[in-house]
Length: 269
Image 1 (cartoon, rainbow, N blue to C red):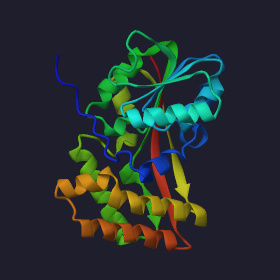
Image 2: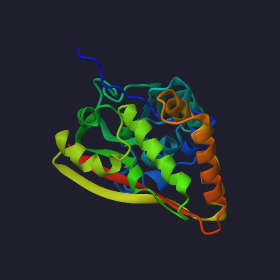
Image 3: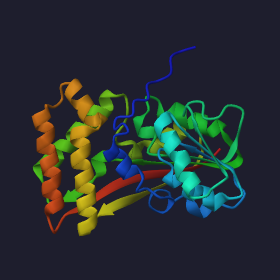
Image 4: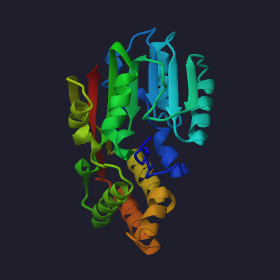
């Protein structure tokens, strides 16, 4: 058997990363999918993370069952706690592989949020999602597009942060501009019926600016991204602290505005 492509998760699971992930909901991260969900559907959530999106999806398809998988045992346990706190009994959380999501089973909906950008072979992953999708079902994926991020004011350190993020993710075998590639990857994976859309997160209120800038100041100095940047020789600890200060400078601006661009696909097998 050939060795599977690398799937290095650039950001890791530092508290600053999970602070962002637990903010995510089906409404702010899967709105393109929601009109297609119905009670009684079975759903596979790939790369479920701490389970906040998973729980929302489970409520929408109940009494249908949701299987949530992630490669990291720690966040799978956290996802289980999330659904338990919400009182959901129609969710199974388990460690799983995106390239073999749940052998032998098919689902009405196969969903992945912010997963494909980190994979060495996103086309193979989409092909695996296609195999896991039942006839007449739906494959849904949403990924950010780092080079499409925009912000104001133009803090120079944020441009350096973006360049570093692109460089580290690509060194890990991923594609940080995945959003713009999703339609092409879906076609390469054998889908012919694909709807491609885009949406953004926008951080522009004082509370949002504080939250977004603080978590990125922490991520750029303390998460796996920071460790890898130093290990690869792309940045020094001093460089990273300069980037963190740039984030805090942006967050302190009363005119601060930041958008995160996402590509989205809905695919019929």
